Image (tube, helix red, strand yellow):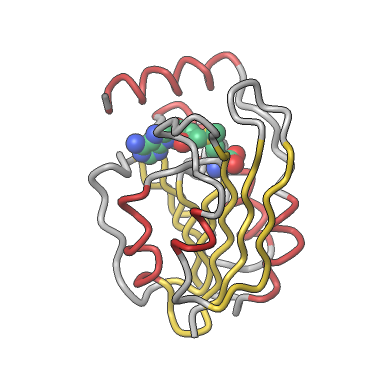
Length: 176
Ligand SMILES: C[S@@+](CC[C@H](N)C(=O)[O-])C[C@H]1O[C@@H](n2cnc3c(N)ncnc32)[C@H](O)[C@@H]1O
């Protein structure tokens, strides 16, 4: 599955690296975090890593795609690129002031994300909802419940025009 994932995303990124504008949820809420260390989970073309590095964060940008991470390598001194399968990656505890997870879902990472935040660390998480229990789709309210030990600052489920997933869940939360 992992090799398949890498091939699928490499092919996609070879054709088109995608939009480089940072996520609006990040541009709205990044300032809640102390400017220190950040983790960008499944960073893709690095649009959110770039944004944070420009703001002064030291960013660890992790993704499985050799094409996407290859493009990102050496592009900014504040970005440390890690080409890695998140299915097997372990996130170090108490390490990050900000964790960003946008348009990617791996439920195995949920408890590690929570532990990886420093006290007052901020989580910005946005991903797709599936009404049909698709493995890559969140259920309604799932994200809200998954991070209940954090202080929820913002949570929303809104319509989305993706062909498979017609809703998006967005969450901003702080470790107490
Ligand atoms: C929809 S893109 C989102 C990219 C980025 N977060 C953004 O918002 O632009 C999903 C990303 O997940 C990465 N990905 C998929 N499976 C992965 C895995 N097992 N480990 C690490 N990255 C993975 C893909 O390479 C792709 O870059």
